[in-house]
Image 1 (cartoon, rainbow, N blue to C red):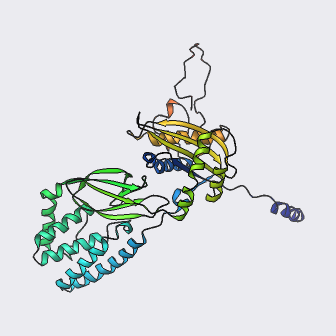
Image 2: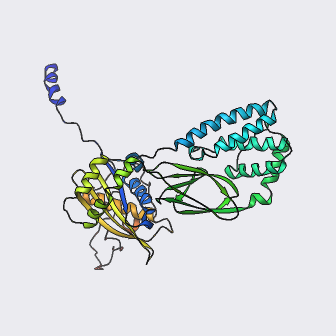
Image 3: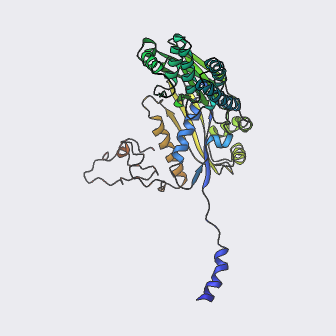
Length: 406
């Protein structure tokens, strides 16, 4: 038996390793300026749908094109952290004049650090609370109230340290919280060039630019914009009862610039259809390191308030089209866009694989169930759970549900 094992080992060593997961991503080309905001959202939904299947490694746009942080904001944050530390030391020594000077300089530095405060409002919240305390001790109650109003806008649940701050200051905060100004609300319209950037206000996702966020508390807020292929951007947003607007031009990465130069050729190949070779798609796949890709074009149709999406599944190394579909999206008023895109992705992937059932990564049988599955009997892999049967009653419409075209 030992001799037999020795003879078999070389044969096993020469066996080819199993193929690894295919690298795949979604790439959407906007065909008009108004469709720019739709592309990143659609790409995100498509990549989420692809992530449900085994055999794929989904590469997100930020991995393909980068999304570098705001280096100036990070530098300002480090200086602000050091400034707050020095301000606090002066405050605890009861050198309030020195503390005021240092905390003013710290707040000025932190105005430039909004893009780097991605986890919480600190040290800005801590510095604002300390500034309110200094102003209160120096007898400027109105300035202290304004600082406390900003603090509540940044973080309504911020806890003031009772060992550090006086009872009078904490009582003043309660007075401000129940006052008229604390109840005031305003709106902010956020725009970017290009559109489609993710908008975070106080580290909470609010949508894609251009977007209007209403009912924000009056005072300071952290605004951050993120769009794959562009440098992150942040600023302190001053909200007032009158609506305000924030707009910026995002700075592209070198990888995105190279990608952008190829979009015209890719768009024409996507819309052309057929099974001909698509050299622009193949060139893009090679440059991005993808084996497969969902590549499409999106166009807004303002006459009927819809969006046209032409999407193809491509073998990216050769430019071969594995399947395509044109759909008209009716908007996202009721949150239906994600499920529509999910069905489209499943349709393309499973048709390319011969219509067989795809096994999803999750073992939870109820994951992603959304209450409409019984209308078409189709799971996330595209295989029908409800098998069609011939009617014994002779009714030709029995079992037809109106969605079989998928």
